[in-house]
Length: 192
Image (cartoon, helix red, strand yellow):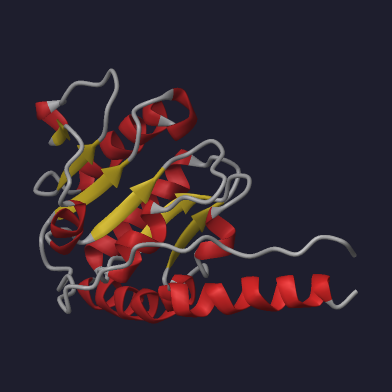
């Protein structure tokens, strides 16, 4: 009864532009470390690439990882203009083993991207509504994850619908929605 949860404020897409979800490109954004599940990301993309070799995965982050050209997985350094990368993609993939919040999820969703993430402790399920604005994959099921990615590849309409839903859903992370929660909390503490 003494715990009050207030989400993070997230810098959302303010360009007025959104992805049309037609490029044959998925994107992964994050540090290239064990926590982010990079080996699983590679396994998933190998499965996806076998079915859809015309799609590519662009990975943006710092760490030890090299491009794998034969499966169209390309590694890039972090970019200060990540919103532009989201806008030129059709989905975001997150393979974290654990994730306190996962800022890249609402960032990408604010650009109109559907997202696919493992339902890891603790953040993705608080951000994604399964089968509405993205997919949550249970039990680190790599094959199921690849199936969800392929489902999005096969259905441009689903990508666009989920993307539009996501844009609306993540507005709850704007400062004008979050700051009143802090004000209410402090007011309630002062009045006790």
